[in-house]
Image 1 (cartoon, one colour):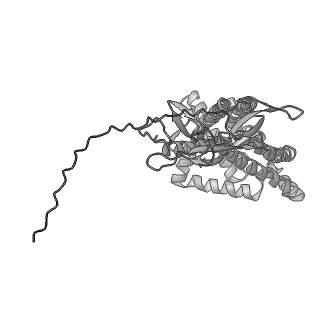
Image 2 (cartoon, rainbow, N blue to C red):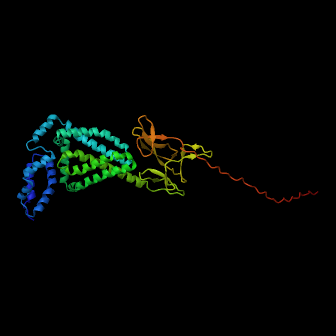
Image 3 (cartoon, helix red, strand yellow):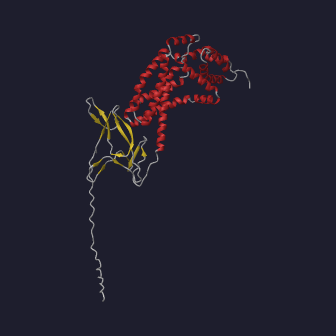
Amino acid sequence: MSDKPTAVRVYLARVRTALADLPASEIEEILEDVRPHLAELEAELGEGARVEALIERLGSPESYAAELRASGGYPAPGEGGTQVLATAGTGLVKPRIALWGLVFCSLGLALLAFSATVSRSLDAFGGLLLFAPVFFVSLTLLLRGGVEPVLALPEVGWLRATMAKGREQQDTGKFLRYAGSLKPAWWVVCAVVLVSFGLLLMLRHRSAVLLLPLLVLGAVGALWAGPRVRTDRRLLWMAVPISAFVIGGALGGFSVAIDLVSRGTAYSGPTSYSPSSVDHYGNDQLTYGGREVENVYAFDAEGKPLTEVYLYDEEGRPLTLTRYACEPATGGTRKLGEDNRFPRPKIEQGVTDDRGNYNGYNGYRGACRELAGVPFSAAIPKVTVPAATTTPSTSPTPTPTPTPTPTR
């Protein structure tokens, strides 16, 4: 095996020299990004390709390094000290707000996606009203001040140094390189998950059609910004929140799947009821004749409805159902828990007009109200028990027992 350096190694050595004013971890990250492209180009040129051939295709290493600087938002040679002084002069407050605003919004979106997946409700998306202003401020500071002050923050430097040390370790380095090779597929997965998430929400809530365009836009953003993050760090403010949302939704789906598996064994007694069955949303259900039972009403022999009735099966196990209640703040419903107390209020969803009048029809999430009482009257059939007929039986006349006569 020849020790003669290849054209790619010689070319990258000159690129490294041109980037020498940048942090070592940044240089390694940049070279790691461009090395596969140069290797493909060298293979295309054929064995024994010379550096001159690479220069003819890409330009000089110095000009190529300048292009990498510009695309990644790094300062030009000689301006690094000026940038550091400028950052020190203006303080670290604005860059830190830009950075930690991104971190806060990303963690919030992950929790929001997790909550929305577990509850299968649109109520969790009300948290967007909290995260949107923070993200807007963070993005504004980034666009005005540039990405260089953020990259110069001590916490970012610590993170880069930690990543660089990880790459030097054998096992950690292999894992990081393997994870890096999966990045193109990751952005495709993000796009698919976002669109699928929106479509599944639409199956449960018609109003989710307003959310679907936002999720589709996020899917397009993942496919566009994801592959370009390495060369333009500003796109992290798009890629990181999208990734956090997808990861949070995936963890929520995993939690729901575990819950379904743990509660998936249906009870099948001698009757037609299945008290431990669940619907496709993971909520407890009663079934009778193959249809779901959402409520149970009990009456006495006179046809009067009974309240506070608790149902059990023949083995003493409660026949539980998931209990819901109206959420006044959102006009939707929220889960209270599970119990076997019946009857429960009927929940009706509809809309309210400008005068506050309520128009109820199923499926539309605009307003919610709970209706107590029994929505029907029951005619209890009178069961006539036939009177017991007694047949006179002839009992044998007892034979009188003679009384003995005393003797004298």
